[in-house]
Image (cartoon, rainbow, N blue to C red; front, side, top):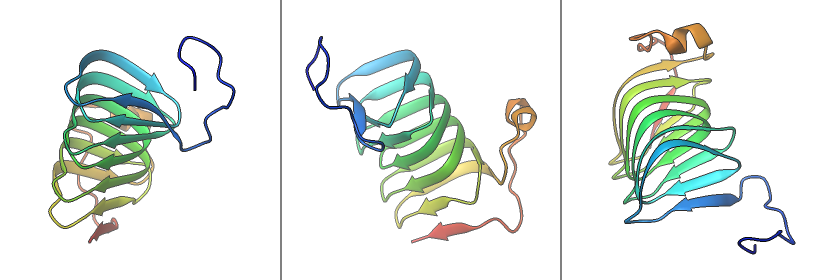
Length: 143
């Protein structure tokens, strides 16, 4: 892909189309397609129909609404995930988590300190403070 011009090939669905490198700090609002990898420090409102990947040196804080998240670094805030949240060893998630379906995977060494609600994400519930709570009978996979 050329920078500053047109691309001869378009990214395939699921392909990484954005990268925040180690040593980079960002604040504000971020919207992206496909996959964004963060190895730097981000304080933002993040929204996408794609996947957010937080690398081992990544540190993300904010209000995040995405289809899927993979965490090897640190994530803090309110997280709305439609499909899957995967926390690898060394990864840490803190805050409120609303999952569109039971798709939480925590690998050995991964840490989740959060209130978790699994099932359909309802807009009114997502906007109420303290709306996220543990729901009995939800599926969690610990590997």
